[in-house]
Amino acid sequence: MTTLLAITELAPTSQGSSKELEFEFLNNFESVHTRKAYKRDILSFIDFFQIVLGLDNLKSCSRLHLVAYKEYLGNSTYTPKTINRRMSSISSYFQFLMEKGFLDFNPADGVRRPKQNVSKETNDLTDDEVVQLFDVISKAASPLHRAILITFFTTGIRKSELIEIKLSDLQEINGEMTLRIKAKGGKILLKFLIPECHKAIYDYIQFMKIQGREIDNNDWIFQPSINPKEPSNVTRPLVPSSIDYIFKKYCKLAGITKSVSPHSARATYIGSSLQGGAELLKVSKDVGHSSVKTTESYNKRRNTIKDSPARNLGFIKRAN
Image (cartoon, rainbow, N blue to C red; front, side, top):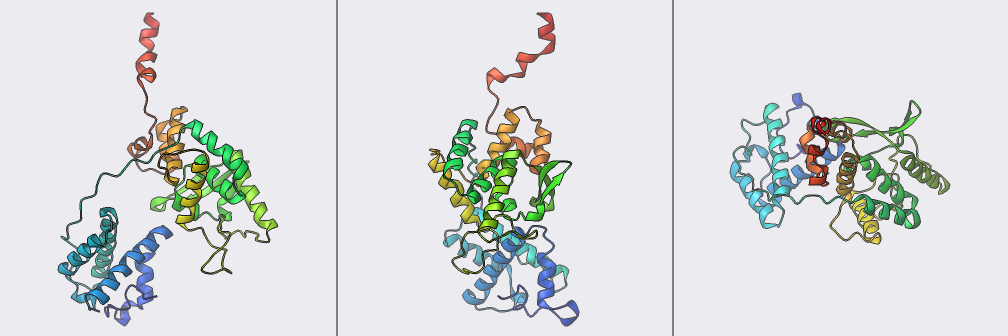
């Protein structure tokens, strides 16, 4: 695959090879998922720059070329959110080239981004719906699918975080089973595993062992059953689309008809724990949010009038 810098003719020997510069740029981001996204976004622009515009040296790239790329994406039915992400990736890349002394200015500066529509809130599941879902997966789900769904709902982790879990991240600390999660923004979270979740993961690991696919310490825990592109390579992480399929399949079997996604499990975890009496700050730290406002926005189970704190005012109780 073309490296990010190979076609630019910008890299003098004194600055290192193209691969070294690519490594420096991408590995400045903690998340593997983020690195992949940045590389994909930038290579997409380089393809446009070469193939559509017929250019091959990024020194000649101007704001006009970036505006043309933005229009190209818009005409290709990409959403404003995707266009903004791609333009942000490209801008970061050009900023890196400036810092390395390859460019005099960032051609992405001043390129207006499309306005994003207000995103639709993620639906969560009620406690009754989760019980209904768990009943279905206990009867119909494979060990892999059962472990994935129970882990989602009992830890509140993101899809990208679940995909990257390795066996070495499963740890016993002070007699309690935990998962070490590499979270968004490079944060490390230590998630407590309730016994039901640990059992589901353990049963899946044992199932894999019986199938002749023992999971090594540095292997991803959740692995695909098959790999159509490379049948011999199944010791690899699941792809995001597989997670989406698994989640929606069992929600449908459980009779849940509203629009849901793996992120719904995170919203459910937050809402259910807050409704159960957990402190907002503790929940916020547990799920890796930088602000309690973010955690609060996930909570779809708003307090009703019957839950008003006015009902528990101490001075009123004393007066009565």
